[in-house]
Length: 316
Ligand SMILES: Nc1ncnc2c1ncn2[C@@H]1O[C@H](COP(=O)(O)OP(=O)(O)OP(=O)(O)O)[C@@H](O)[C@H]1O
Ligand SMILES: [Mg+2]
Figure 1: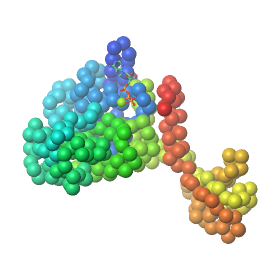
Figure 2: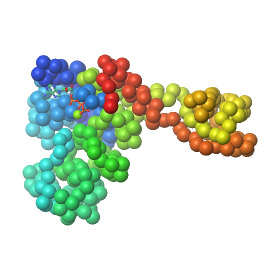
Figure 3: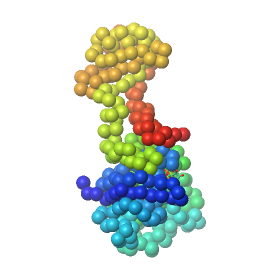
């Protein structure tokens, strides 16, 4: 894997307060990296330093080996980013906005503009005025602007803020495409693990200005769920269901929530499948109301627990 952004021992003090404490991490080309942390953790501060909006006073940052202290302009030419709202001319079309922007960048021809428009999924609306765009479309036009010059690293600070679920999904797919098709290192900050889970290959967790963990999303899952898959099963007769499950299958099952559901825990290496348990319940005449895998919630819980340990930053 090729390193794209490399941050080493970053410290930052604003006013009298030390905001970042020895922050280090690296990202790779072709991956989506999630920069996850509760409000006030230091995400925006770190990102602003990496995109050159805040001064780097202690630590090292390089982009594809180019040091931002020694070679600021060259390093910045390898980065695209959206930290605050991207500037756009609302009276102009999306295309005219991109053409304006392309003039300020080297080597961006019409072919590149058309390609980028296709990647961000705006081909059929690109000639409409930006004032007619939804927030999700504006955000994708911002991403188009940010990648016109083929950056090696694309950094977006909380890009899904304010978007509805369809907008979030659209943006997510665009970012995954950019990572894969442009071999770009895409970095996205967020305060929601559930959002990172769907989009990122790896996640770095920051709280109170310190990096707490950097892992593959699957590793977080394994830790959060342990070595078993957990399900909540609600049936017409939970008592009977629980007894049937524990007598027929080598899994753990217990009543919870005052008996309103059965919690079933199936070891990962087990041959038992939830579908098999389903079938057995039905065959025994127990009506099933719902079966829910307790996944994303406990991943979010694991994140909250991890960040709360680090000085009690609260998550709204
Ligand atoms: N100019 C400044 N002067 C002093 N403190 C600042 C300044 N800018 C930010 N901070 C503080 O730095 C800490 C980190 O802020 P930062 O904006 O980087 O967090 P964040 O992770 O982006 O949070 P959020 O999820 O709310 O966007 C916060 O405690 C904030 O109050
Ligand atoms: Mg922020």
